[in-house]
Length: 81
Image (tube, rainbow, N blue to C red; front, side, top):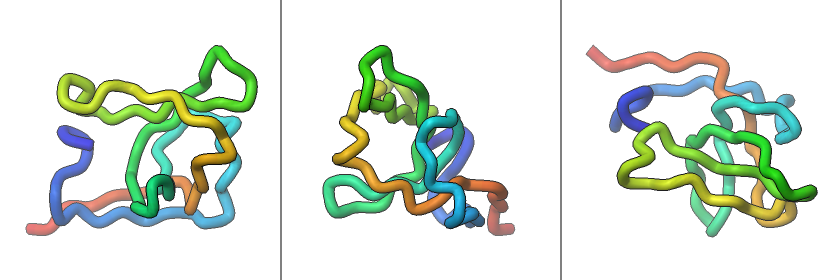
């Protein structure tokens, strides 16, 4: 998620916000791994767009809602000094 997030950054999430009907930065579980990604609307019903801020290296991918679990919405992040 560079340049927004870098390795060793700390994120705080609200685990009560798991509704992917809204755009935002979320912690998602797909492919047996946790990811911090932006979520956007897809043109297809039942799908979402999952985006990285580093789109040159990680282009947006469309996922079926049933294949993605939202762990929570990122509400804050900090950097180590």
